[in-house]
Amino acid sequence: MSTLRPDLEVIARHIPAGARVLDVGCGDGSLMAALRDGRGVDARGLELSPEKVELCVSKGLSVIQGDANRDLAEYPDGAFDYAILSQTLQTAERPDLMLEHLLRVGRQAFVSFPNFAYWRMRLSLLVKGRMPVTPHLPVSWYETENIHHLTIADFRALLAEKGVKTEGCWFFAHDREIGSTGANWWAEHAVFQLSR
Amino acid sequence: MATILTSTSAKLTLPHALPLDSGQALEGVEIAYETYGNLSADKDNAILICHALTGDQYVANPHPITGKPGWWSRTVGPGKPIDTDRFHVICANVIGSCMGSTGPASLAPDGQPFGMRFPVITIRDMVRAQVALLDALGIECLHAVVGGSMGGMQALSFAANFGERTQRVLAIATTARHSAQNIAFHEVGRQAIMADPNWQGGAYYATGRAPDAGLAVARMAAHITYLSEAGLTDKFGRRLQDRDSKSFGFDADFQVESYLRYQGISFTNRFDSNSYLYITRAMDYFDLAEEHGGRLADAFARTSARFCLISFDTDWLYPTAESRNIVHALNAVAAPVSFVELSAPYGHDSFLLDVPAQDRVIKGFLE
Image 1 (cartoon, rainbow over the protein chains, first blue to last red):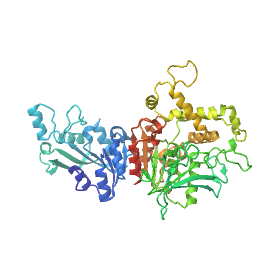
Image 2: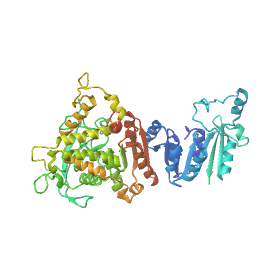
Image 3: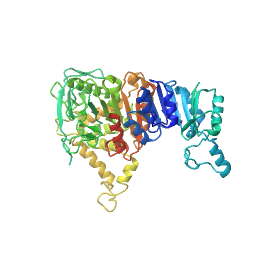
Image 4: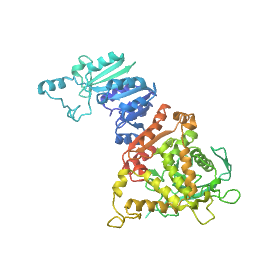
């Protein structure tokens, strides 16, 4: 699992063996493959790109090509122990509704997202007065898939509003895990483990 | 030139009567089939390929009548996505067809061709015959059942009715039920055949006259549904056939007319009109949910097979929505399922043609 992105590594570490998992926006299936091979997890995926689905199928993974904005609604209630949404929330048409579906389909959810209130972002916006372009968010505002930028504080507010419980949270800067103090300033991205 | 693969052509006569959905039973059913590649000692590397409406068992070797390469020779063979160096591939002519398996042109117990006395069959009846063949071959559990179009319907029906007998189900460009539009196009074809005076109520075999004109029209209408509008435009546009200007008559002025006429006429050399009636009927009757109390998910409740579905963005005969419908049903019973909509310009026929992404998905899924 050492080749996993740090946020995926954290998620993988907290999923028990044999769990049933839905990876929403599973990409090339590296997390799913790690979960399956490392701990016998029954992992399913949902992915928009046909090319990535093809890659997943060739790894023997069960992945459905579809749009999480629409197709998540088709999954039955409580079908999975965990629903995972990594680095995808900010691309959702309605992140709030997607969060509700995650916690409907899964008993718990893992959500990871880039923190727009990271100090370099703030500084960039303050000094240059332009939407930040960083190694983690390298695409200009007019062509980015990230249509709903959010901060850790925004996310916590949404959780409070929806009555969602935080089971755990982890923060990262420069691909290393950091402490939670002042995370909304210091974290480039965050992982939350959630339940109803 | 097509390479000739090592294959075995064989014919099996079922030892028992085949029970049919209509309530009737067929005695002495013959099943003509081809096999490629070696069956492992454990008999665990068999892949059953189910053919489409006008397909046959000649999946990878030249057709004995037309001499053309097998209908899926680009997919099945040594080193190909369905690798005959690894897998034992079985492809059987469906019952009701006319390439060696029992159908309306076969002789009834009275020594005369069945004609319209042949019982109406269903997709599930076809699958029962395939399973009887597997029984005879001593194959308990398939590595995979694979099919496109009507072959996909058989693969799904196999999963629903004999789910414990396959590890994988690969259904391409298919549907779990025929829509009103699907039935409508088939009815046009059937009426064309039955309106041909040479059809003679289906009892044409000994008369020296067959309803070829009707069958050709049926094929022409169906062929249009296998292609995409953009594909037709691309291939023919409004170009004229061997002439510089319109004839102001009813000759095949346009290339597309000439093409369709050729498709229709050449089809009659290799296909029996009554088989066309019976098999299109079987497809129209197909509704997997109806067979399982009206809920498609229930059809898949008892199988532990892995599924893979493929659709094509230009297929308007069995559009992507039909595959998604199947995927949702499989999800509802938590069956392991993969699905991908591939982009290809050829319409429904894409599954038979050069779509490298399909090759990769098939190969990956069968690993």
